Image (cartoon, rainbow, N blue to C red; front, side, top):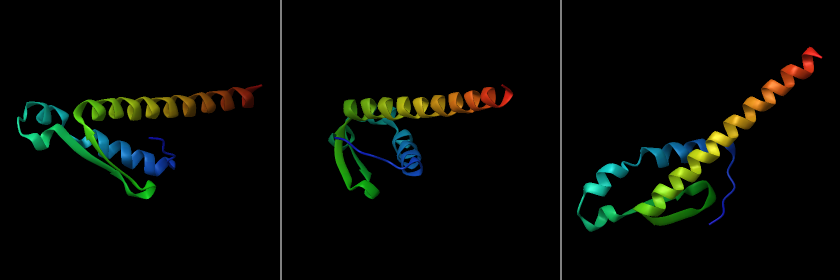
Length: 85
């Protein structure tokens, strides 16, 4: 699956993914807790993910958020340095 997000849509999607209580799903023995329905309506994404896929998606989304924040911080620092020169 490949998706392009606007930054606000991405932040909302990240918030949605991080709100899912994976720990309770792991200890829940019912069949319904083995899957989670993930959606991003603005991109027409509707996926039924296993817990393993959900954990991987959460890692991917949080890693992407870290990269965006790091990139933003580096741009700010480089811009400040160019003003001082």
